[in-house]
Image (cartoon, rainbow, N blue to C red):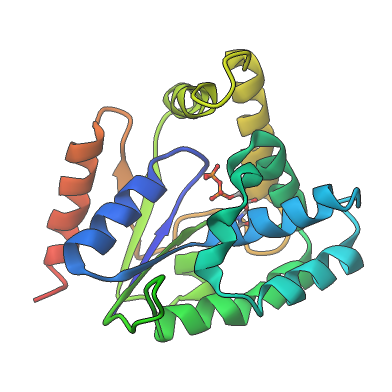
Amino acid sequence: MIIAIDGPAAAGKGTIATGLADHFNFAFLDTGRVYRAVGLAMLEKNLDPADEDLAEKAAVSLSHTNLHTLLANPKIRDEATGLAASIVAARPKVRKALLDVQRNFAHNPYFPDNTKAKGAVLDGRDIGTTVCPDADIKFFVTASDEIRAKRRFKELQLKDKSVIYEHVLADMLTRDKRDRTRNIAPLAPAKDAFILDTSDLDIDAAIAKAIEHASTFIS
Ligand code: CDP
């Protein structure tokens, strides 16, 4: 059983994916974290994230590590890392290098302690369209630009009080535009995706709605 969750930055994908994975006892993979890990590897070596061949090398070497350990670096959620991730993610060689590792996880999911799971929840930008077009259940999670920027601002403020809302909004819109307009696997809802707008939903309500929809597919 594969659940695919796509959508723009800070729409609530991660929260919903975690809620679904907990409820159905499925393993969860945040594929954004995989792209972020490639972006971060480039930044930490002072390499240009737009250098496709070097970014491909970083992607290939990361694809051999346990995906759950990619969370370890605290800089993984920084806004600079997110921007670098969206640059490497627009490069076809990088996407190709990361495709199999995501598909393998979807079809043979495992928990952080390496035990097998009976289902997988993957969140990202192209899971329902490209990585797992065969997913059993597909969501496209969205929310208004302002609400998404406010959520991301709150998240970043917990780590850095000096963060400026207008910068967060501008960075998020830059990233969204790059994700939506890139030539390869652009961000878009799969034709058979359930559209879940979380603008007016709190966390519990959004998760409840997702569980209600998924339950119609899972006995
Ligand atoms: O958490 P947030 O929504 O800010 O972004 P993320 O899911 O961590 O992803 C970071 C970046 O990786 C995105 O802006 C995309 O450019 C890229 N990405 C992608 O291209 N395809 C995916 N399946 C996941 C992420």
